[in-house]
Image (cartoon, rainbow, N blue to C red):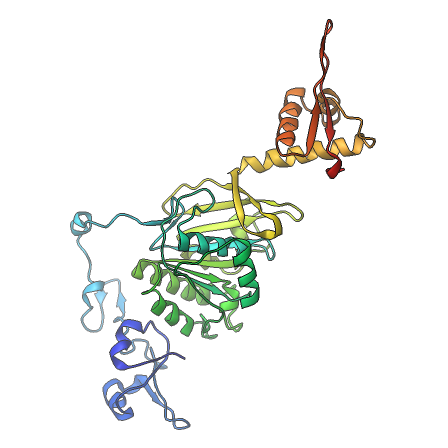
Length: 397
């Protein structure tokens, strides 16, 4: 449970029980009455957002219905705002930490199956924002980063940071966090901690959501998860920082919607401003990074993971992976049908793959550039040019 002095309560209190440290117990009991609990066991003073039978609380907004206020005067932030005033207001330009992808004032999610490389991608994002390096081929704005590494210990984070050659500027890391939920359908003290750190950072990454929870909240509970993720969204919007939650994916009821694989309540998807899903098949170094946003049209990307998992590189748009997979099938056909390594022609491979020679030619050219195969260029004769012979390099046989 977080603790505050009374002068800090109004700024930090966001609707969970807190302990009051200063002045005297009697002061709070007299001032806040039924919302204060004086614990006989340890003498601690607990200020509640509400007590049973009364949901208003000492700082809660008065309840309303369709006719407007029902008890007391609403604070200025809750009064209707003239539309003309809104249209006349000059907002500062949206500030992107990653050009066209991650903006300050946004809550984002980075999802993927366990062991898919999403934590590598989250760590790489932290490094790029901390140092101002490009992220997946996009320019970044150098900024202050706090990285919650909740599933990886200090040893693993250190090893990974060295592998991606991170030379830190001002970034910080935490390996624990108070629970984001209270286990009873409400938000927990971890949200207060994030709210406090939001003053000192431009990007906060929480890796992972499930590791930041108590285990007593069902992640399929829309009400409870909605409270949690909307609290984080409120912090991002109100403090003008970017918060990125790393989360697991599972099976989707709708196979045509990759974002339906986000594990847990649909309220999670409803709360974020930007979503990224890393889709990777077992045994492949490449993956598709799917993207959706409230404000932007972001094209899906093909990424390739470096050796030893050391970060991801941008390869091209989502169609690039289809070309890579097609090339692999050609390579498999060559290995299967040319066991002696004598070589094959494009025509032979086209007949095996049941595609045109032109298609095979493009795939062979790509495999040659990638270093998997070599070409024995054949000379021209009076009868015309003889077809080139293609062989898989010895190290890949």
